[in-house]
Image 1 (cartoon, rainbow, N blue to C red):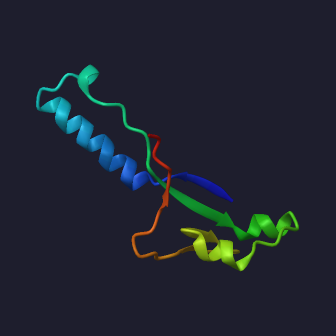
Image 2: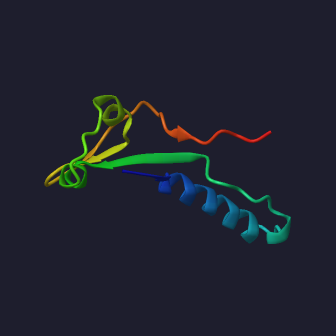
Amino acid sequence: MSCGVDLPHVTQRIATQVDRILKGARPGDLPFEEPTKFELVINLKTAKALGLTIPPSLLARADQVIEWRSVRRVAHSGRHWSRPRQV
């Protein structure tokens, strides 16, 4: 099981920063951006090898489930794990 950044979202944010630099912005003047979208991936094959049982409620929340011979991407209606914003 892992929780990591949503790579397509990070790639899009990087492209936006590069576009600003190419249009003349100074890199030092651009704001630092942290990832805000995360993805939950569960490997059932490894869980079984370790003797772990993953609750169905957690499987339902996963963005991706790795099974014995395949990877199942779970289609969510735009839902992602969001990191709480600091105030």
